Length: 403
Image 1 (cartoon, rainbow, N blue to C red):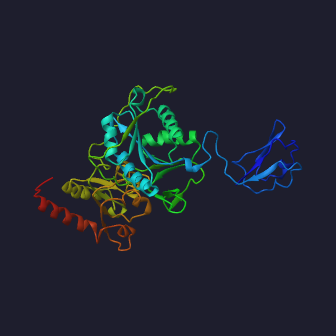
Image 2 (image 1 turned 90 degrees about the vertical axis):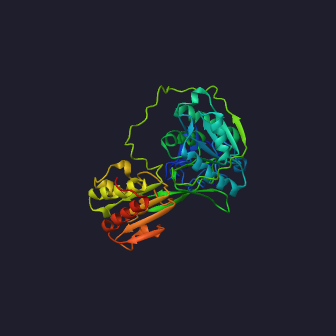
Image 3 (image 1 turned 180 degrees about the vertical axis):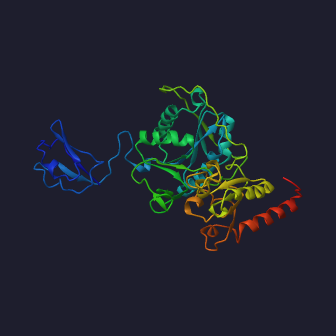
């Protein structure tokens, strides 16, 4: 529902301007105009117009170029990232959640891939995509947010998907907001869960809000497509079907211009021992360690298990370990096979980054610590007693004499 002014009846008397408490009405070229972004639907202007030019309309206004019928939008799309011609892990995670959503909506699942070859497109199909829109034009190989946003927007306008998902990665965060702005639709960033409303069939986009103190459910009921970015390692991969077949649709990148030209991409140099996203085992420490020396203890356990070291924000803020190890809402999101939380209380900001781990083991003195609510196994006790015993036992089982 919104308010409009019929220009054929408006005589420019300006009575409506003084009636509006939100300064949403102006007069241009002798005709009153309502700014729908400022209008709060107070309806104070309806009765002051002597010509009856101000009326209330039931339907929500749609931007020009976008279909008025939401039913015209069908299908779930995911944007498949590639790095050096190889599909990024987040793409398979998006296919996993996209498959679940498409099955609930009884519609198709498509992937959009720029800058890779046909063999990578076939891999996306085996991981669940029914169609792959593939552009392997030379201009799309190196990421350029202007080219990518123009090309992706064009595809969406041509095919009208109902839902579009992308990774909340450096690439996704760079160009997906530009796509949403061009399409004049909503975008929810850094989602940790996606569901379908059983009654309205709208996408429920769930993400932490207010510093992680609440989980907000966000909807985009009046515009399409419904767009969201998803944090890496939050969603599970779907099922890989080696014999699955699908359709590959080749996309041309004609008439696309950019004000910038990507000459080269330089990879960031980081500590080779830190690979939290790919680690099968993570041993993480929090404020309960007491000081930086506690991480030396955890390194022994991680080394025995072939794992990596993680940390809560509290430990990083204390300066005990570098930010590159931080896990949580303001750090990395991980999904290892085994996550061992040592001296971590389990604030919601930390849980957001690790609660999708296959097995969570918590070691904490406080039996009431929230971390135990998500842990498969919990040990109440002093980590300085438990961790050395655990490390020793693992070494014995694996036959490790020294590290």
